[in-house]
Image 1 (cartoon, one colour):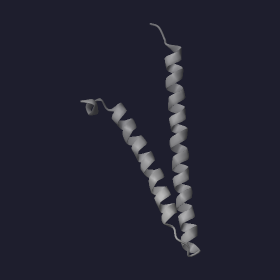
Image 2 (cartoon, rainbow, N blue to C red; image 1 turned 90 degrees about the vertical axis):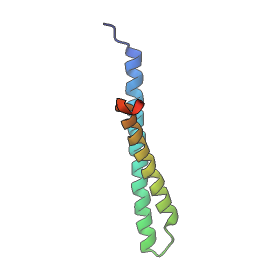
Image 3 (cartoon, rainbow, N blue to C red; image 1 turned 135 degrees about the vertical axis):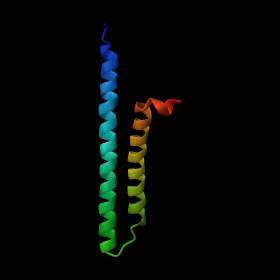
Image 4 (tube, rainbow, N blue to C red; image 1 turned 90 degrees about the horizontal axis):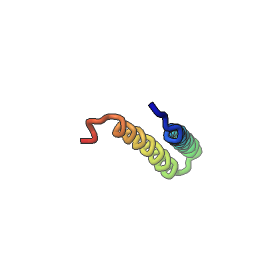
Length: 77
């Protein structure tokens, strides 16, 4: 049995990179929600912060759904 170290390294690098990217996008969404709350408390418009937070959370949800698609073989037809 041969182990393809380069393929293992590639999978590990992509997994770590994707995990960090999703965590950063989620953090940006949480920060946008905090900005929205601060804007509402000071009487300013908070539509842009809400749109940014929604986009971040939708991107995270899309990444999770794509991961499930890749894991569950029944989705591949």
